[in-house]
Length: 359
Image (cartoon, rainbow, N blue to C red; front, side, top):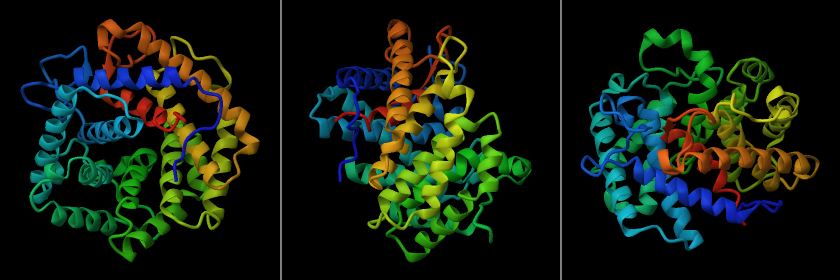
């Protein structure tokens, strides 16, 4: 099934924004090392994404693989040079982390956690579709090892031990907002491996949908990011199941999140130079996934107008940010309207929402 928006969206604007994101990812590609830079303008003290965050490094590779597949499906033209460079970046990045995971050197990952493993599993699955010849040797063994590594970290209540470094234990609960959904989305893409994978996810979904957990995260200063990852997680979980009528708990969680989000100051005030672009990007990305989840259940009606309004104003802000700084960051998204720096992960979040919009 093709999940895409039926609402009133300027599809010509979406195409322009996505093509510029492709240009930005190419700009952020080192021609010599064939690895991704982290931030533009590029600095030479610590230029690469893997030197800042292994999650952002591998997540951007996932974005690039999705971008290539998206261009193919839309029959848009990606330059041969871009596809060649992206191909090398995917291969080099997967090889480097594969070597690390084969040696089980998890502590070498910056703040390494189960989200790292989730994104790497996701990258392997996507690469198997787009560039199967680029998969590392014996990747399937590492694939199974990482799946089991995540499963083994689940607790009785459905939660997980997040970090590999025991000294980061105090940050476990606050970090669940990001890293737990990332790990679970990776597992969902491996759901056919064994019944144990599915039962692990089901147990985790029962945990994440608890009212206590929802209220804790919604009251934090990362509520928008939390909602984004919850919406993405719910979308991928529902999409993985053939029967869409068995999600009463997940549906209740989704509705509760949306109702809380509608009451926030973020949803009810204009975006301006004080807004962090990454927050608006994640807001839009989350809403597109939430809308698609309702579409799968044929129950989006009561939220239709609100989705239209919120996604449209997010697009207006993000397109303005992108347009104003074309000469400086080549299609990326600076931190705010008054900033001059743009990270690869922010462009990934924008694309994560845009790819669900074209009809």
